[in-house]
Image 1 (tube, rainbow, N blue to C red):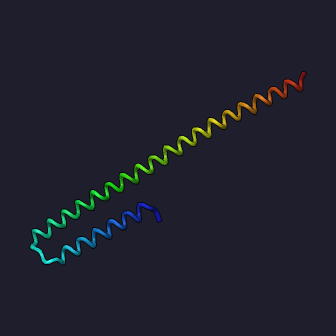
Image 2 (cartoon, one colour; image 1 turned 45 degrees about the vertical axis):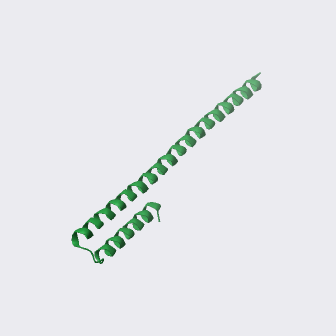
Length: 96
């Protein structure tokens, strides 16, 4: 199961639990509605924060993979050039 699904499920479960708890509390309707709005805003802010952390983590991993791929390509090119040079030298030595 992916991390995003776990986070989303947890946030949704907390939201449902909070709303049910508030709905069954003995408060005036206007107070209950305000509490629901406040909790909803809190959960939305928390979700945005978690999403930003997740997106930043993915972006960082992508940048690291990109850097590793570039380094691997550069090392491969250097090795290819070295083998090509050694091969040319060996052929030149053989012809002489």
